[in-house]
Length: 498
Image (cartoon, rainbow, N blue to C red; front, side, top):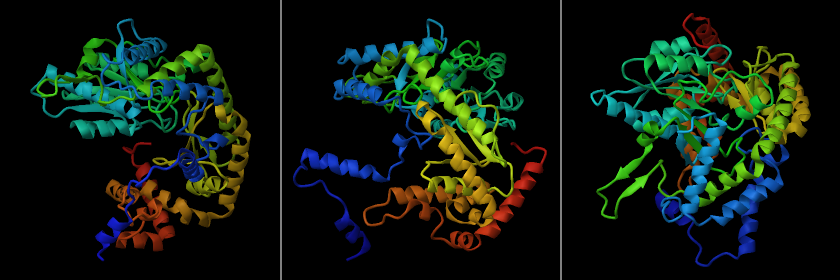
């Protein structure tokens, strides 16, 4: 039997008979055994938990509209009402003018896709002869903007980022051309939790006559409450005259169910470019306000319920606790010799790096993972990221204690940088050729989506198979030392970035 035939025989099929409910649910619960243990407060991203009672409220609200479909708001006027009210409450929180409008989306990626698409179509309508449009954004802008430019045929021009993580507005200015359709900045940027200078970018947008989108997907439902609690922040929302739109995720610090986000525009002159309308379809007129056709009613209902259930008082209370945890974590990290927090975090998100060549941060990450923490590794520069929520108040002390131990252990065992995930992340973070990194990540994705009978461990797939991979595996330590030298030379160049 050939390999393809063998794979076909091993492929999972729909069972001939249905599985009893209790057995089915027990099997599904067992699937979770290897998942990140966010319930234990050891995961600093992906899940935003506001307590068991709030979770039950979201589940019940979601269940009430579980089968409804937002594709046709005329059939389900309840969903249209809740979406409209979610957008209005979000716009009010972000100090948008009374004429502000927007839609819900399935998440931050769709919100950013819709913003880029809208401004592309707006630019084309105003100057149809311009064929190659571009957008200007910080190097730290979310990859969803890269995806949007890739999907919609725009060029992303990346502005330099200052050592403190904020975008260099002068660099943005130099990148603006006659073909620029949009400026973007972050409030805050995801990697390090640093707030871009929104006021300065807003002035640039007004000077150049360009729209300006603020990506507040992660901070839109956090920064307003941080500000209300008395933390000093520069204006980051529609109070800045140049801001024409913002995105803010409900399923992050909005503490709603996955996946729910919003994109809000200053007025209808911008939102109308987001709509898609098809008139030639034999099945009738097709119109959608965002990327999705079918839109789950339960998600819209759960988002509305989250805003109404918590209210301003609830959001302030959760933000207060998250800030308490953040302050404890930041202070703890800064007290560990060899570590430093990057920039000045604006709220409850931050990242730290190693300032000691003897402390390889990726080896520290491996040590922390061994202790049961879910670690978000970043690169350029190598950092560890923490998105802090109310859930982490009771775990900050344990995290800092384990982190101090991990740093001391790695300092005493420098050979750890060439083993485990530290070696792979170390190489991928410093490889000067992006195509090499894309090649490795492509292998990971191929492994995750392989056909039946051909599954492999995704991380092993990243560094296995070809002559180059075998060379890197045999000479990890030497390769890491060489890449360290390349990185040192790059940083010394006067035109280098961070």
